[in-house]
Length: 106
Image: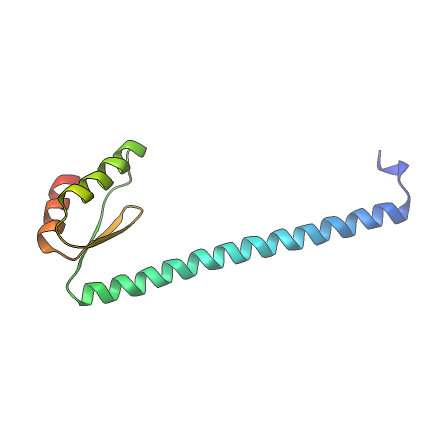
């Protein structure tokens, strides 16, 4: 099928594909770099919070989406102090909030 195209056309297609590949690779690299930077920033911030007495808790993977929703609702209804979450990783300002969370969800 490719023999129906001129050498110039084929070369032009190859150049276009190479350019698109480079652009896609750059997009992927930038996306991954941003993800890594966000994770580093979170770890630095959470490390500082731990030094201030906050309590970090990581739970097992969520069983399903409803499980994750149930946890978010529980956090809103039961936590007295501030807290942060990132996936299944949580950090609590209040000791009792951390203990109650552990008792409920681990």
